[in-house]
Length: 123
Image (cartoon, rainbow, N blue to C red; front, side):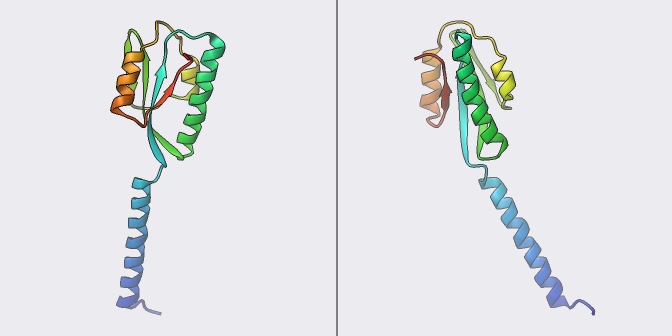
């Protein structure tokens, strides 16, 4: 049986629609987009483990495409470091904590990006 022009056009339009829907879903999918702010000021090891566990949960959701971590910002009183590629949960768990809380910097980041998720062992 020879394919007719109508069959070819129908199949072509079907595949085109399929590709367009896939592209649209890939652009809008991924759930919520968040910025993670981690207070890296000095923490007792057990308190830091709680921060690392919270990040691990967010990172798992990021890997499962339930949310998108746009960036991770590490903050203390000495400055801040913005990581555009989210580090693994193991990398965060292995970080050393030092310095005093950078509360002013954290507040400025949250004010500029209200959807930021702040992880801190400070009260």
